[in-house]
Length: 194
Image 1 (tube, one colour):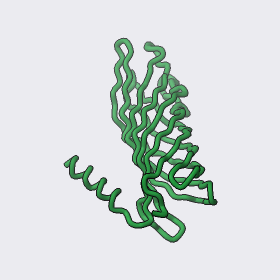
Image 2 (tube, rainbow, N blue to C red; image 1 turned 90 degrees about the vertical axis):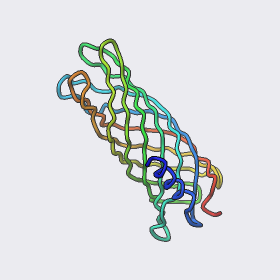
Image 3 (cartoon, rainbow, N blue to C red; image 1 turned 45 degrees about the vertical axis):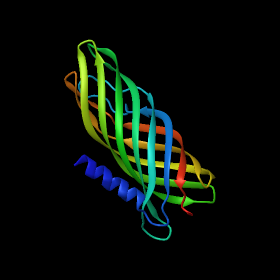
Image 4 (cartoon, rainbow, N blue to C red; image 1 turned 60 degrees about the horizontal axis):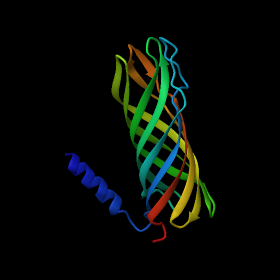
């Protein structure tokens, strides 16, 4: 079944029409999932850092001026949290993310965009006798701007807001509500004008 899903996704990406755009990219930045505290202990995540690799492509043309775009990414972030009886513990977050976004305003070299996304997040933390391993669903809202260096390359700055929680960290639920700010680059293998 997994092979069939992967084959379908590849077929979808490779069979898009003449306005298609397909690119590969990477970015890095910070993640702050500590906007909310735990109700039990008041624990909250600290500022962390990480990186991402992604594939993006045009999905469907909604009108002459709006094209729905998709981005499939792998993200890896690390941050710490102080938990009573454990003290500081490092958390690793591995995201498999699908984002959908639209260009809101566009000039010759600069584009503002916004969208929605969702991630399947695998969390992992170990210290002394505490071990946390959990997989959860985390939705997000994103906005950003990209600067076109040429027809095949761009730089972008993006911010997103995610929300969710890890259900069992030493007997308590820890919120993952927070922001992510990244800077990255895309190399387009197929441009819109081809």
